[in-house]
Image (cartoon, rainbow over all chains, first blue to last red; front, side):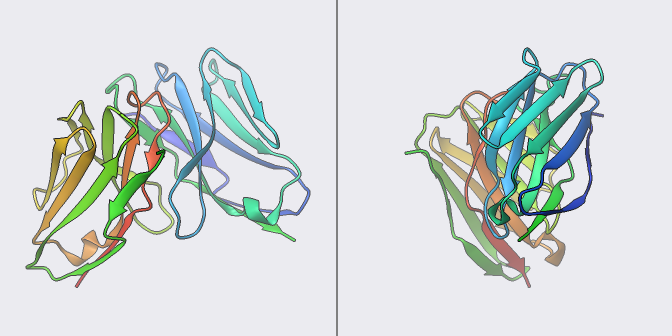
Length: 114
Length: 113
């Protein structure tokens, strides 16, 4: 079935450094790739998303890149701050089986060390 | 109003109890979701309603029963749960299904004793 893999599972960086999280997906029909941030005890919130007709998207310190041929997409956070510490989930829509389903990756726990 | 509101925030129930979780959104979203989330794991899809009709049931045990009374409300009825059902239950909505942003509620922390 459809699958989204995510690496690394944990990531520690020094404040001010960059963080990169990588995901791969299996459904070649997927067209929408959101990233959610979940702080401890809080709800997942969308931080950025990208569609298959775009290779890169940037929003201030956050950027996402997509390689449809390789079925890879990545989240890049620059100038990390302690408040970036959270679990980050990548996701892909499961268009092959359902218009309403999103497949989540297993998550990356990011710690930014002051 | 860009909020998805869930009640209650916390719930402790015995294995013989019947309880309901409630979710409300007033953004006009046509898709509403129930997810179950265990600690340090991603949200796990349980049910999807599209235009108030059940479109996905991810083989969820019948002790979980969803209901969508109208386009703004989503309920999850719980009966005869097991301790392993203890988790964070998240409701979400999206404007047009899986290729649009999902807005999550703050969740109900459920403990089954």
